[in-house]
Image 1 (spheres, rainbow, N blue to C red):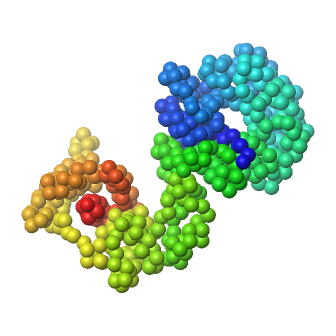
Image 2 (tube, rainbow, N blue to C red):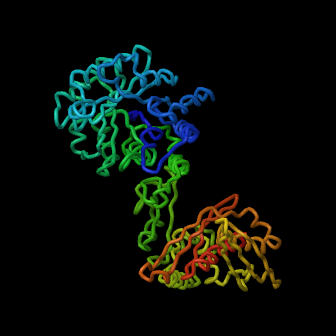
Image 3 (spheres, one colour):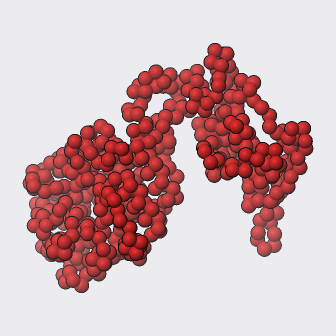
Length: 522
Protein backbone atom coordinates (compact mmCIF):
# COMPACT_ATOMS: atom_id res chain seq x y z
CA UNK A 1 0.00 0.00 0.00
CA UNK A 2 1.24 3.50 -0.85
CA UNK A 3 1.78 5.77 2.17
CA UNK A 4 -0.11 9.09 2.01
CA UNK A 5 0.76 11.74 4.57
CA UNK A 6 -2.37 13.40 5.94
CA UNK A 7 -1.85 17.06 6.82
CA UNK A 8 -4.69 18.46 8.92
CA UNK A 9 -5.26 22.20 8.87
CA UNK A 10 -8.54 22.30 10.86
CA UNK A 11 -6.96 24.51 13.52
CA UNK A 12 -5.76 27.06 10.99
CA UNK A 13 -7.73 26.91 7.71
CA UNK A 14 -10.78 25.43 9.43
CA UNK A 15 -10.96 28.28 11.93
CA UNK A 16 -11.46 30.67 8.99
CA UNK A 17 -14.87 29.14 8.25
CA UNK A 18 -18.00 31.19 8.80
CA UNK A 19 -19.34 30.69 12.34
CA UNK A 20 -16.21 28.86 13.54
CA UNK A 21 -14.22 30.26 16.46
CA UNK A 22 -11.83 28.07 18.42
CA UNK A 23 -10.33 29.10 21.72
CA UNK A 24 -6.74 28.06 22.44
CA UNK A 25 -8.10 25.37 24.77
CA UNK A 26 -10.46 24.15 22.01
CA UNK A 27 -7.48 23.82 19.71
CA UNK A 28 -5.60 21.74 22.29
CA UNK A 29 -8.54 19.32 22.55
CA UNK A 30 -8.83 18.94 18.77
CA UNK A 31 -5.05 18.52 18.39
CA UNK A 32 -5.17 15.70 20.93
CA UNK A 33 -8.03 14.00 19.07
CA UNK A 34 -6.20 14.30 15.73
CA UNK A 35 -3.03 12.89 17.27
CA UNK A 36 -4.92 9.91 18.72
CA UNK A 37 -6.53 9.31 15.34
CA UNK A 38 -3.10 9.06 13.70
CA UNK A 39 -2.88 12.21 11.54
CA UNK A 40 0.67 12.75 10.19
CA UNK A 41 0.83 16.56 10.49
CA UNK A 42 -1.29 18.99 12.53
CA UNK A 43 -1.08 22.64 11.53
CA UNK A 44 -1.65 24.50 14.79
CA UNK A 45 -1.96 28.01 13.38
CA UNK A 46 -0.11 31.12 12.30
CA UNK A 47 1.70 32.42 15.40
CA UNK A 48 2.63 35.72 13.77
CA UNK A 49 -0.90 36.64 12.74
CA UNK A 50 -3.01 36.61 15.93
CA UNK A 51 -2.70 36.29 19.75
CA UNK A 52 -4.91 33.17 19.92
CA UNK A 53 -2.54 31.12 17.77
CA UNK A 54 0.44 32.40 19.77
CA UNK A 55 -1.33 31.32 22.95
CA UNK A 56 -1.94 27.83 21.51
CA UNK A 57 1.76 27.26 20.86
CA UNK A 58 2.63 28.68 24.30
CA UNK A 59 0.18 26.29 25.98
CA UNK A 60 1.72 23.35 24.14
CA UNK A 61 5.07 24.27 25.70
CA UNK A 62 3.75 25.24 29.15
CA UNK A 63 1.72 22.03 29.51
CA UNK A 64 4.59 20.02 27.98
CA UNK A 65 2.20 18.28 25.59
CA UNK A 66 3.91 15.58 23.56
CA UNK A 67 2.12 14.29 20.48
CA UNK A 68 2.40 10.53 20.02
CA UNK A 69 1.65 10.15 16.31
CA UNK A 70 1.61 13.62 14.77
CA UNK A 71 4.06 16.39 13.98
CA UNK A 72 2.96 19.87 15.10
CA UNK A 73 3.32 22.52 12.40
CA UNK A 74 3.39 26.32 12.46
CA UNK A 75 2.23 28.31 9.44
CA UNK A 76 3.76 31.48 8.02
CA UNK A 77 4.27 33.48 4.85
CA UNK A 78 7.45 34.21 2.95
CA UNK A 79 9.36 37.25 4.15
CA UNK A 80 8.03 40.67 3.17
CA UNK A 81 9.32 42.26 -0.06
CA UNK A 82 12.73 43.96 0.16
CA UNK A 83 13.26 43.26 3.87
CA UNK A 84 15.86 41.44 5.92
CA UNK A 85 14.45 38.05 6.93
CA UNK A 86 15.96 38.35 10.43
CA UNK A 87 13.73 41.38 11.09
CA UNK A 88 10.51 39.69 9.90
CA UNK A 89 8.12 39.31 12.85
CA UNK A 90 6.28 36.35 11.30
CA UNK A 91 9.55 34.41 11.03
CA UNK A 92 10.50 35.28 14.62
CA UNK A 93 7.17 34.03 15.97
CA UNK A 94 7.63 30.65 14.28
CA UNK A 95 11.08 30.28 15.85
CA UNK A 96 9.59 31.18 19.26
CA UNK A 97 6.73 28.68 18.86
CA UNK A 98 9.08 25.79 19.56
CA UNK A 99 7.99 23.58 16.65
CA UNK A 100 10.29 21.70 14.29
CA UNK A 101 8.03 21.80 11.22
CA UNK A 102 6.87 24.90 9.35
CA UNK A 103 4.55 25.53 6.43
CA UNK A 104 5.68 28.47 4.31
CA UNK A 105 3.23 29.78 1.75
CA UNK A 106 4.34 31.79 -1.25
CA UNK A 107 2.90 33.13 -4.48
CA UNK A 108 2.84 31.01 -7.64
CA UNK A 109 0.52 33.23 -9.66
CA UNK A 110 2.19 36.28 -11.14
CA UNK A 111 -1.07 38.25 -10.86
CA UNK A 112 -0.78 37.96 -7.06
CA UNK A 113 2.84 39.05 -7.17
CA UNK A 114 1.83 42.21 -8.99
CA UNK A 115 -1.40 43.13 -7.21
CA UNK A 116 -1.26 41.46 -3.75
CA UNK A 117 2.45 41.67 -2.97
CA UNK A 118 3.02 44.72 -5.19
CA UNK A 119 6.54 43.61 -6.03
CA UNK A 120 8.47 42.12 -8.93
CA UNK A 121 8.49 38.51 -10.02
CA UNK A 122 12.21 38.28 -9.31
CA UNK A 123 11.78 39.64 -5.77
CA UNK A 124 9.03 37.06 -5.15
CA UNK A 125 11.42 34.27 -6.18
CA UNK A 126 14.03 35.63 -3.75
CA UNK A 127 11.40 35.80 -0.97
CA UNK A 128 10.56 32.12 -1.48
CA UNK A 129 14.21 31.06 -1.55
CA UNK A 130 15.33 33.19 1.40
CA UNK A 131 12.51 32.10 3.71
CA UNK A 132 12.83 28.37 3.09
CA UNK A 133 16.64 28.55 3.22
CA UNK A 134 16.47 30.35 6.58
CA UNK A 135 14.24 27.71 8.14
CA UNK A 136 16.33 24.86 6.72
CA UNK A 137 19.48 26.45 8.20
CA UNK A 138 17.67 26.37 11.56
CA UNK A 139 16.93 22.63 11.20
CA UNK A 140 13.24 22.90 10.33
CA UNK A 141 11.29 20.47 8.20
CA UNK A 142 9.73 22.77 5.59
CA UNK A 143 6.51 22.25 3.68
CA UNK A 144 6.16 24.82 0.94
CA UNK A 145 2.55 25.72 0.06
CA UNK A 146 2.52 26.96 -3.52
CA UNK A 147 -0.51 29.23 -3.21
CA UNK A 148 -2.79 29.61 -6.27
CA UNK A 149 -0.53 27.15 -8.10
CA UNK A 150 -3.15 25.88 -10.56
CA UNK A 151 -4.33 29.36 -11.56
CA UNK A 152 -0.71 30.43 -11.84
CA UNK A 153 0.00 27.41 -14.05
CA UNK A 154 -2.90 28.30 -16.35
CA UNK A 155 -1.80 31.92 -16.83
CA UNK A 156 1.98 31.62 -16.75
CA UNK A 157 3.29 28.05 -16.55
CA UNK A 158 6.92 29.09 -16.90
CA UNK A 159 6.79 31.40 -13.88
CA UNK A 160 4.81 28.89 -11.80
CA UNK A 161 7.58 26.36 -12.48
CA UNK A 162 10.19 28.93 -11.46
CA UNK A 163 8.55 29.38 -8.05
CA UNK A 164 8.60 25.62 -7.48
CA UNK A 165 12.22 25.44 -8.60
CA UNK A 166 13.25 28.12 -6.07
CA UNK A 167 11.51 26.27 -3.24
CA UNK A 168 13.32 23.06 -4.19
CA UNK A 169 16.70 24.81 -4.47
CA UNK A 170 16.20 26.23 -0.96
CA UNK A 171 15.60 22.73 0.42
CA UNK A 172 11.82 22.34 0.81
CA UNK A 173 10.95 18.84 2.05
CA UNK A 174 7.48 18.90 0.49
CA UNK A 175 5.93 21.12 -2.15
CA UNK A 176 2.18 21.33 -1.73
CA UNK A 177 0.26 22.47 -4.82
CA UNK A 178 -2.60 24.69 -3.65
CA UNK A 179 -5.89 25.04 -5.51
CA UNK A 180 -6.67 28.11 -3.44
CA UNK A 181 -9.71 29.54 -5.25
CA UNK A 182 -11.45 26.17 -5.51
CA UNK A 183 -12.47 26.76 -9.09
CA UNK A 184 -10.50 24.10 -11.00
CA UNK A 185 -12.09 20.80 -12.06
CA UNK A 186 -10.56 17.31 -11.56
CA UNK A 187 -9.47 16.78 -15.16
CA UNK A 188 -7.23 19.84 -15.06
CA UNK A 189 -5.88 18.94 -11.59
CA UNK A 190 -4.75 15.56 -12.89
CA UNK A 191 -3.12 17.02 -15.99
CA UNK A 192 -1.29 19.76 -14.06
CA UNK A 193 -0.04 17.48 -11.29
CA UNK A 194 1.30 14.96 -13.79
CA UNK A 195 3.10 17.64 -15.80
CA UNK A 196 4.54 19.23 -12.66
CA UNK A 197 5.84 15.89 -11.35
CA UNK A 198 7.33 15.17 -14.78
CA UNK A 199 9.18 18.50 -14.58
CA UNK A 200 10.40 17.78 -11.01
CA UNK A 201 10.52 13.97 -10.76
CA UNK A 202 12.50 13.71 -7.51
CA UNK A 203 10.28 16.01 -5.43
CA UNK A 204 7.59 14.99 -2.92
CA UNK A 205 4.35 16.80 -3.79
CA UNK A 206 1.13 17.39 -1.90
CA UNK A 207 -2.33 18.76 -2.73
CA UNK A 208 -4.31 21.47 -0.92
CA UNK A 209 -7.80 21.90 -2.41
CA UNK A 210 -10.71 24.22 -1.67
CA UNK A 211 -14.34 23.38 -2.28
CA UNK A 212 -15.81 26.31 -4.22
CA UNK A 213 -16.89 23.99 -7.08
CA UNK A 214 -17.75 21.10 -4.72
CA UNK A 215 -14.71 19.28 -6.12
CA UNK A 216 -12.19 19.46 -3.26
CA UNK A 217 -12.49 15.79 -2.33
CA UNK A 218 -12.42 14.62 -5.95
CA UNK A 219 -9.49 16.95 -6.72
CA UNK A 220 -7.53 15.63 -3.74
CA UNK A 221 -8.11 11.98 -4.65
CA UNK A 222 -7.21 12.48 -8.31
CA UNK A 223 -4.07 14.42 -7.31
CA UNK A 224 -2.99 11.41 -5.24
CA UNK A 225 -3.61 9.13 -8.21
CA UNK A 226 -1.51 11.51 -10.31
CA UNK A 227 1.43 11.20 -7.90
CA UNK A 228 0.94 13.42 -4.81
CA UNK A 229 1.93 11.77 -1.54
CA UNK A 230 0.46 14.34 0.88
CA UNK A 231 -3.12 15.57 1.26
CA UNK A 232 -4.02 18.72 3.17
CA UNK A 233 -7.57 19.25 4.41
CA UNK A 234 -9.83 19.76 7.41
CA UNK A 235 -12.18 17.63 9.49
CA UNK A 236 -15.69 17.90 7.99
CA UNK A 237 -14.30 20.20 5.28
CA UNK A 238 -14.75 23.35 7.39
CA UNK A 239 -12.97 26.43 6.11
CA UNK A 240 -13.28 29.78 4.38
CA UNK A 241 -16.01 30.36 1.79
CA UNK A 242 -17.25 26.89 0.75
CA UNK A 243 -14.68 25.10 2.86
CA UNK A 244 -11.59 22.94 2.41
CA UNK A 245 -11.12 19.37 1.27
CA UNK A 246 -12.97 17.11 3.71
CA UNK A 247 -10.59 14.63 5.32
CA UNK A 248 -13.55 12.63 6.66
CA UNK A 249 -14.35 11.70 3.05
CA UNK A 250 -10.81 11.59 1.64
CA UNK A 251 -9.24 9.28 4.23
CA UNK A 252 -11.79 6.42 3.99
CA UNK A 253 -12.02 6.79 0.21
CA UNK A 254 -8.25 6.44 -0.19
CA UNK A 255 -7.84 3.77 2.45
CA UNK A 256 -10.89 1.58 1.76
CA UNK A 257 -11.20 2.02 -1.99
CA UNK A 258 -7.83 3.18 -3.28
CA UNK A 259 -5.66 0.87 -1.16
CA UNK A 260 -3.58 3.76 0.16
CA UNK A 261 -2.41 3.93 3.78
CA UNK A 262 -3.41 7.19 5.52
CA UNK A 263 -3.97 6.36 9.20
CA UNK A 264 -3.54 3.16 11.25
CA UNK A 265 -6.12 0.64 10.05
CA UNK A 266 -7.54 0.12 13.55
CA UNK A 267 -8.17 3.88 13.89
CA UNK A 268 -10.37 4.29 10.82
CA UNK A 269 -13.42 3.14 12.80
CA UNK A 270 -13.00 6.27 14.96
CA UNK A 271 -13.46 8.76 12.11
CA UNK A 272 -17.20 9.27 12.73
CA UNK A 273 -16.49 10.01 16.38
CA UNK A 274 -13.75 12.48 15.34
CA UNK A 275 -16.12 14.23 12.94
CA UNK A 276 -18.79 14.72 15.58
CA UNK A 277 -16.28 15.73 18.24
CA UNK A 278 -14.93 18.58 16.08
CA UNK A 279 -18.47 19.74 15.22
CA UNK A 280 -19.33 19.76 18.92
CA UNK A 281 -16.30 21.88 19.86
CA UNK A 282 -16.88 24.19 16.89
CA UNK A 283 -20.57 24.49 17.91
CA UNK A 284 -21.65 23.39 14.44
CA UNK A 285 -24.69 21.27 13.60
CA UNK A 286 -23.45 18.00 12.01
CA UNK A 287 -24.48 17.59 8.36
CA UNK A 288 -26.61 14.41 8.21
CA UNK A 289 -25.87 13.76 4.52
CA UNK A 290 -22.07 13.93 4.86
CA UNK A 291 -20.42 10.91 3.23
CA UNK A 292 -19.19 8.12 5.54
CA UNK A 293 -19.73 9.97 8.86
CA UNK A 294 -23.15 11.64 8.53
CA UNK A 295 -26.11 10.29 10.49
CA UNK A 296 -27.92 9.70 7.17
CA UNK A 297 -24.91 8.22 5.33
CA UNK A 298 -26.32 4.72 5.81
CA UNK A 299 -29.99 5.61 6.39
CA UNK A 300 -32.66 3.77 4.39
CA UNK A 301 -36.24 4.97 4.02
CA UNK A 302 -37.86 3.38 0.95
CA UNK A 303 -39.38 -0.02 1.70
CA UNK A 304 -37.81 -1.63 -1.38
CA UNK A 305 -34.34 -0.44 -0.31
CA UNK A 306 -34.79 -1.68 3.26
CA UNK A 307 -35.97 -5.08 2.06
CA UNK A 308 -32.92 -5.42 -0.20
CA UNK A 309 -30.32 -4.16 2.28
CA UNK A 310 -31.60 -6.54 4.96
CA UNK A 311 -31.01 -9.44 2.58
CA UNK A 312 -27.62 -8.25 1.32
CA UNK A 313 -26.09 -5.01 2.58
CA UNK A 314 -24.14 -4.31 -0.63
CA UNK A 315 -27.38 -3.71 -2.52
CA UNK A 316 -27.58 -0.15 -1.14
CA UNK A 317 -24.43 0.30 0.99
CA UNK A 318 -21.05 0.88 -0.65
CA UNK A 319 -19.12 -0.12 2.51
CA UNK A 320 -19.85 -1.68 5.88
CA UNK A 321 -20.76 1.29 8.15
CA UNK A 322 -18.76 -0.26 10.99
CA UNK A 323 -15.52 0.32 9.05
CA UNK A 324 -15.90 4.06 9.72
CA UNK A 325 -17.60 3.82 13.10
CA UNK A 326 -21.06 4.61 11.74
CA UNK A 327 -24.21 2.52 11.73
CA UNK A 328 -27.17 1.67 9.53
CA UNK A 329 -30.41 3.53 10.24
CA UNK A 330 -33.80 2.34 9.12
CA UNK A 331 -36.26 5.23 8.80
CA UNK A 332 -39.98 4.74 9.33
CA UNK A 333 -42.22 7.11 7.38
CA UNK A 334 -45.11 7.24 4.96
CA UNK A 335 -42.79 5.53 2.44
CA UNK A 336 -42.30 2.53 4.76
CA UNK A 337 -43.16 -1.06 4.07
CA UNK A 338 -43.12 -4.25 6.11
CA UNK A 339 -39.32 -4.49 5.91
CA UNK A 340 -38.90 -1.07 7.54
CA UNK A 341 -41.10 -2.02 10.48
CA UNK A 342 -39.40 -5.39 11.01
CA UNK A 343 -35.92 -3.87 10.85
CA UNK A 344 -36.83 -0.90 13.05
CA UNK A 345 -38.47 -3.21 15.59
CA UNK A 346 -35.28 -5.25 15.78
CA UNK A 347 -33.18 -2.07 16.16
CA UNK A 348 -35.39 -0.80 19.01
CA UNK A 349 -35.67 -4.25 20.61
CA UNK A 350 -39.45 -4.33 20.10
CA UNK A 351 -40.77 -7.87 20.41
CA UNK A 352 -43.27 -7.90 17.56
CA UNK A 353 -45.34 -10.95 16.76
CA UNK A 354 -44.16 -11.01 13.17
CA UNK A 355 -47.07 -13.11 11.93
CA UNK A 356 -49.74 -11.18 13.82
CA UNK A 357 -50.80 -8.98 10.94
CA UNK A 358 -50.10 -5.83 12.98
CA UNK A 359 -47.46 -4.67 10.52
CA UNK A 360 -50.13 -3.19 8.29
CA UNK A 361 -51.74 -1.56 11.30
CA UNK A 362 -48.44 0.05 12.34
CA UNK A 363 -47.71 1.23 8.79
CA UNK A 364 -51.21 2.70 8.44
CA UNK A 365 -50.91 4.57 11.76
CA UNK A 366 -47.46 5.92 10.81
CA UNK A 367 -48.73 7.10 7.42
CA UNK A 368 -51.76 8.81 8.96
CA UNK A 369 -49.59 10.45 11.62
CA UNK A 370 -47.09 11.68 9.02
CA UNK A 371 -49.95 13.10 6.98
CA UNK A 372 -50.88 15.07 10.11
CA UNK A 373 -47.34 16.47 10.41
CA UNK A 374 -45.50 13.89 12.53
CA UNK A 375 -42.10 12.64 11.41
CA UNK A 376 -40.50 9.62 13.04
CA UNK A 377 -37.07 9.59 11.39
CA UNK A 378 -35.50 11.20 14.48
CA UNK A 379 -38.16 10.26 17.01
CA UNK A 380 -37.46 6.64 17.86
CA UNK A 381 -38.91 7.08 21.35
CA UNK A 382 -42.32 8.17 20.06
CA UNK A 383 -42.25 5.42 17.42
CA UNK A 384 -41.57 2.85 20.15
CA UNK A 385 -44.60 4.07 22.11
CA UNK A 386 -46.81 4.11 19.00
CA UNK A 387 -45.81 0.53 18.15
CA UNK A 388 -46.56 -0.65 21.68
CA UNK A 389 -50.02 0.91 21.48
CA UNK A 390 -50.85 -0.75 18.15
CA UNK A 391 -49.60 -4.08 19.53
CA UNK A 392 -51.78 -3.58 22.66
CA UNK A 393 -48.63 -3.89 24.80
CA UNK A 394 -48.63 -0.33 26.06
CA UNK A 395 -48.58 0.31 29.81
CA UNK A 396 -50.03 3.61 31.04
CA UNK A 397 -47.73 5.04 33.73
CA UNK A 398 -49.61 8.33 34.16
CA UNK A 399 -52.56 10.21 32.71
CA UNK A 400 -52.75 13.95 32.15
CA UNK A 401 -55.74 15.62 33.77
CA UNK A 402 -54.72 19.20 32.97
CA UNK A 403 -51.83 21.60 32.63
CA UNK A 404 -51.51 25.38 32.62
CA UNK A 405 -48.55 27.57 31.66
CA UNK A 406 -48.15 31.28 32.35
CA UNK A 407 -45.44 33.72 31.30
CA UNK A 408 -44.90 36.95 33.24
CA UNK A 409 -42.59 39.82 32.34
CA UNK A 410 -41.54 41.99 35.27
CA UNK A 411 -40.65 45.68 35.39
CA UNK A 412 -36.95 44.86 35.54
CA UNK A 413 -37.21 43.02 32.22
CA UNK A 414 -36.93 39.50 33.70
CA UNK A 415 -39.30 36.85 32.37
CA UNK A 416 -40.68 34.09 34.60
CA UNK A 417 -42.48 31.01 33.28
CA UNK A 418 -44.67 28.97 35.62
CA UNK A 419 -46.33 25.62 34.91
CA UNK A 420 -49.04 23.75 36.81
CA UNK A 421 -49.69 20.08 36.04
CA UNK A 422 -52.35 17.66 37.32
CA UNK A 423 -51.68 13.98 36.73
CA UNK A 424 -53.31 10.71 37.68
CA UNK A 425 -50.49 8.39 38.75
CA UNK A 426 -51.55 4.90 39.75
CA UNK A 427 -54.94 6.22 40.87
CA UNK A 428 -53.51 9.13 42.84
CA UNK A 429 -53.83 12.75 41.82
CA UNK A 430 -50.57 14.67 41.69
CA UNK A 431 -50.78 18.46 41.49
CA UNK A 432 -47.42 20.21 41.03
CA UNK A 433 -46.17 23.72 40.28
CA UNK A 434 -42.73 24.72 38.98
CA UNK A 435 -40.95 27.75 37.54
CA UNK A 436 -38.52 27.51 34.63
CA UNK A 437 -36.30 29.44 32.25
CA UNK A 438 -39.09 29.18 29.70
CA UNK A 439 -42.46 27.42 29.32
CA UNK A 440 -40.88 24.14 28.14
CA UNK A 441 -38.41 24.08 31.02
CA UNK A 442 -41.22 24.83 33.48
CA UNK A 443 -43.39 22.01 32.08
CA UNK A 444 -40.44 19.62 32.16
CA UNK A 445 -39.70 20.42 35.82
CA UNK A 446 -43.37 20.07 36.71
CA UNK A 447 -43.70 16.66 35.04
CA UNK A 448 -40.59 15.31 36.77
CA UNK A 449 -41.65 16.74 40.13
CA UNK A 450 -44.97 14.89 39.88
CA UNK A 451 -43.45 11.54 38.83
CA UNK A 452 -40.09 11.19 40.55
CA UNK A 453 -41.41 9.73 43.83
CA UNK A 454 -43.21 7.02 41.85
CA UNK A 455 -40.47 6.46 39.28
CA UNK A 456 -37.08 7.51 40.75
CA UNK A 457 -35.28 6.22 37.62
CA UNK A 458 -36.25 9.40 35.74
CA UNK A 459 -33.84 11.37 37.94
CA UNK A 460 -31.01 10.67 35.47
CA UNK A 461 -33.08 11.54 32.39
CA UNK A 462 -31.94 14.82 30.84
CA UNK A 463 -33.36 16.90 27.99
CA UNK A 464 -30.41 17.63 25.65
CA UNK A 465 -31.94 19.24 22.55
CA UNK A 466 -35.14 20.99 21.53
CA UNK A 467 -36.22 21.93 18.00
CA UNK A 468 -39.35 23.63 16.72
CA UNK A 469 -40.44 23.75 13.09
CA UNK A 470 -43.51 25.31 11.48
CA UNK A 471 -45.15 22.71 9.22
CA UNK A 472 -47.76 24.63 7.18
CA UNK A 473 -46.39 28.17 7.19
CA UNK A 474 -49.09 29.35 4.77
CA UNK A 475 -51.54 29.17 7.71
CA UNK A 476 -49.62 32.01 9.37
CA UNK A 477 -50.17 32.18 13.16
CA UNK A 478 -52.65 29.25 12.99
CA UNK A 479 -49.98 26.96 11.53
CA UNK A 480 -49.07 23.61 13.06
CA UNK A 481 -45.71 23.25 14.73
CA UNK A 482 -43.56 20.15 15.08
CA UNK A 483 -41.49 19.84 18.26
CA UNK A 484 -38.59 17.39 18.41
CA UNK A 485 -36.93 16.69 21.75
CA UNK A 486 -33.77 14.68 22.34
CA UNK A 487 -33.36 13.08 25.74
CA UNK A 488 -30.64 10.92 27.27
CA UNK A 489 -29.80 8.90 30.34
CA UNK A 490 -26.50 7.29 31.32
CA UNK A 491 -26.75 4.62 28.60
CA UNK A 492 -28.53 5.99 25.54
CA UNK A 493 -30.34 8.89 23.89
CA UNK A 494 -33.74 8.97 22.18
CA UNK A 495 -35.94 11.38 20.25
CA UNK A 496 -39.63 12.17 20.75
CA UNK A 497 -42.10 14.29 18.81
CA UNK A 498 -45.21 16.39 19.27
CA UNK A 499 -47.42 18.15 16.70
CA UNK A 500 -50.13 20.74 17.33
CA UNK A 501 -51.40 24.19 16.35
CA UNK A 502 -50.44 25.09 19.94
CA UNK A 503 -46.71 25.06 20.56
CA UNK A 504 -47.13 24.33 24.28
CA UNK A 505 -49.27 21.27 23.55
CA UNK A 506 -46.73 20.02 21.00
CA UNK A 507 -44.04 20.43 23.65
CA UNK A 508 -46.13 18.52 26.19
CA UNK A 509 -46.59 15.59 23.78
CA UNK A 510 -42.85 15.34 23.15
CA UNK A 511 -41.96 15.78 26.85
CA UNK A 512 -44.42 13.17 28.11
CA UNK A 513 -43.28 10.71 25.40
CA UNK A 514 -39.65 11.21 26.48
CA UNK A 515 -40.48 10.08 30.03
CA UNK A 516 -42.85 7.30 28.94
CA UNK A 517 -40.18 5.84 26.65
CA UNK A 518 -37.75 5.59 29.57
CA UNK A 519 -40.37 3.86 31.75
CA UNK A 520 -41.51 1.50 28.96
CA UNK A 521 -37.92 0.44 28.22
CA UNK A 522 -37.40 -0.33 31.90
